[in-house]
Length: 425
Image (tube, rainbow, N blue to C red; front, side):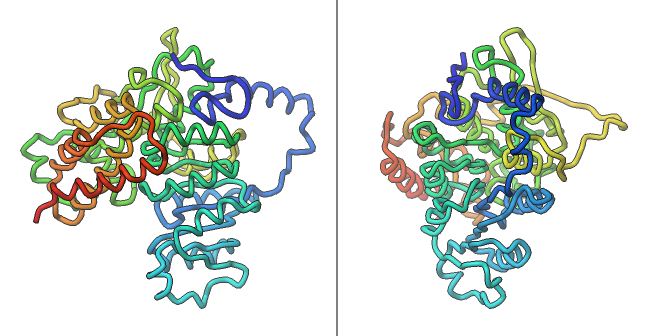
């Protein structure tokens, strides 16, 4: 059973699920007029880490449409510096961060706005999120690379809108403990975890029976084993519904993204792996569900538009009008659900195993997967070898039940080297 503290600002997992008891109190205060002086607060200053990725660009659309509620105070990119410069010209942030020093040195920054300070290197991310001017950090850097900046934001008591699931996959126990110790707020941006977060507000934490993560099934949901062996990089990058970056799109095709989301949910919501289930939902309209002990199932539904969960995290605990697409109930549509076949999607089993094991398992799985996906995109590994390679690396590592952050970083390095044994010469 899910057990969470009721006091503000943290839950048992470290940051969030105290909200069902808080929202009615807030509503009561609003009705009685006790908080009217705060109805027009100053703009919330947002550091968008990974501003040129799919999540980052959607976040900037939300900020632009916020009518002054939100302001981009910092933007960061690794190598898409043309796009970063264009964003800086449009949003005029206090800081623009280029994390690749080589690319930054070769780039022409002459058109950078005078009021925007250029910072170079990954250490600049840690420096900026600690600044007093930053209220909220969108952690949207893909992969393990987002861990240090997310850690620094929580350490400095910032609200973190978490789109980087790998942070919790790698160091979920330590990250949630840090959030709890520092009184930081950790809010989910992944559509599935945002859906669960919203649905959980329909009941008390002790009434939760299970969390149900939905998955589109990716582009190869109906492929035979022989067809899967012939999958090309171009086919894997052609997702039928979501527009995402290469790594996340391949993860969706292998269902490794759902494996990582199982681990993320385990830490984010403080729930055991045995209370998490995955179902295939091709339409991607029901983003996830919560089943309560009385049999009631509460779902969050919307078109597949990441601007909605991003905005919810940015404006929480309020809901405001936004730019996300709406469901059209004036036309007929169907919602389908089917069990996730573990033989067709073997990555799911790895996710459940790591969620149960905890410790170093998540860090090793994540690093092995990042290395395997990189090799697949480079044509050095077959699509059907990604998951077996990850399983092999996971099984060969010496599990540490309570690793330190330094140990987890070392496990990450080791797993990336170990995956090279699978790469075609």
